Length: 195
Image (cartoon, helix red, strand yellow):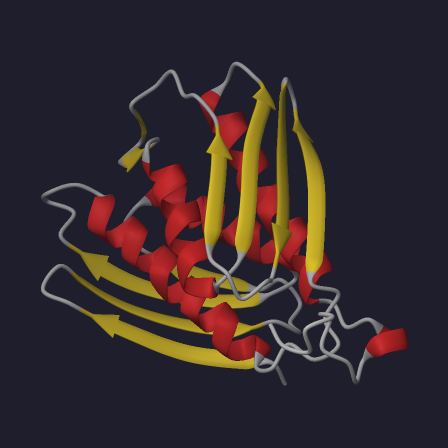
């Protein structure tokens, strides 16, 4: 089973994550940030990962530390669960239409953390979730998961739809990338022999 249990405790946040890459898309998410809970639930569903997140943080300040630290820990959990990455397809790309919005995520589980992000938001927040934290979450996930990650909102009007499209596309791209390639299940998917 490709799974990981991770904890992170700082003076700002306390987070526990349980992750199973070979799950059914089940989610138990409790971060205290409703819209973020919704996005992580969608990420789990569309990736088919089983994901449990318990997070507490200094929300009296704002949501920055909690959202970023959750991205850090989730990236670390994905990396740990993948182990030596033997047999994975490695790459995943998905275009996700969400009503009037269209989002795209393309990624490479490369062993090299990198983020390219394109997306503009009209609102400062959705509930108590700051829209600027979408990019920060993606960055934290990419760097700590050692994933080359490109996320782009091609167009859209409704910020809820644009962000939801990105998280769903991320889930679908991750699902593709971590899938075992049955024709090459005993190989590391790199000409270098390592990722």
